[in-house]
Length: 363
Ligand code: ADP
Ligand code: MG
Image (cartoon, rainbow, N blue to C red; front, side, top):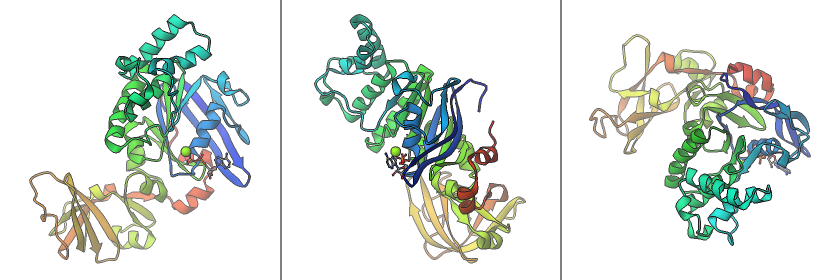
């Protein structure tokens, strides 16, 4: 991690609902000031972990500690955390300012200080100019920023965000991602951000925990997860990848075991590459799809597997230079870009959380 103090420590955290183990022995340390994301498919246990940290849910076993204090048995309002949900319900009959000040009123903060602090929180999300409006007079993105101001005004040390941008359309979401990052940096508080959107997690986070079936499949920086996925699941969930099983690894890559090779690490050319450290394989272009920023070329290799290549639209190459349907081509890649995967299906079931942490190198 870093040399910053630990804000949150989860130890053997488990939560079962009847026969469903929603969270299954999660061990995790999150540093103060970190932008930490929990990424995983729907049902992988992300929301339950957040609810356990917030205290809305009690673990079946394991502990939650905040800033060195075991808070497992403490009520939500006794924990120095606040939550922003996807369905951030603002009070429609109150002004934006009163919405933001609400948490302070509940805590018995006086009227004048309430106003000052709420205005400051609104300024931090650049909405102080709409303080007197009603929530219905704002856009979706503005309402989400109000929800953020409402959560930060009470100055929690940790902010939990459960898919807070999920209801926004793509353009707005990308804009809000930048703002979120900025706000987090300015406030300097720990963000724990839940998303099922890998791109969002990669963009925002200092570190990411990839969840699968209630467990952490891999923990690391965006770079580590993308460049060195430990399993088929992570390679496939974080970005897209060409996955090679034992048979195709042997044939195409000349290696034993399971492997991943990212589409952008491959190049299409009329001849094989002879440079040292590179490998090539012949095939036939099945599809070449123009994407604007690049070209996606799907190639059926002579040795069997179908592989996707992503060529950036740079260097003045015209559409068609990457090959067209039916063309015979060679794919080339740097041998060093091939990533060895643990046997994913086994790893997902048999790896204990502590071993998962060790595998990716707890720093
Ligand atoms: P995610 O947020 O990653 O989509 P959740 O934490 O919401 O996942 O859910 C994890 C699993 O736990 C799912 O199988 C879900 O159906 C189950 N679950 C969550 N909350 C409850 C509950 N209150 N009662 C029963 N099952 C639940
Ligand atoms: Mg959820």
